[in-house]
Length: 136
Length: 80
Image (tube, rainbow over all chains, first blue to last red; front, side):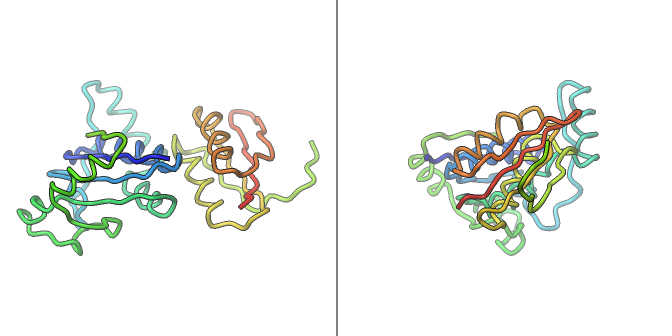
């Protein structure tokens, strides 16, 4: 039906959660999805990533209520969502080679749903192939 | 209401916000058998639009949408 590129360079939980939700909307509509994680977002993909930070917001009430909903298990965690989406549709997940090299990470150090570690030329290629590009 | 069919599996997703209920339904249908009926319960306001839309798009069959007290039951037959 189409193709979308999602680019995320933030390790903030709310950004990653939003990314996964957008990906779910795309996959469930038969849209091919390619995700490129950069910078802090790659760190969040580590198998041994430190404790995940709470969702932040400029509005204290938003942060409080979203974090409460997360604690109560009412929001599907972004990692679980991406893992499920891999089984349900055409989803490719990649991590930026530059930050993995800086951090000394290899593919085996990242969550199993990561398909590949690629460079920005792949990002540019995917951007040209995509019908839409969204960055987080 | 008397239903003359059997539901293969019920997923209670009332504790989950969007896209949780839809994801539960899709996962069960993907793993399930053709002609079987799968039911998901949802309190999420988006489900009333998103679930029928997905069922139609995926070419499955919406058998029933049942409004209960504070939640909705979606019964879907896997057709392919």
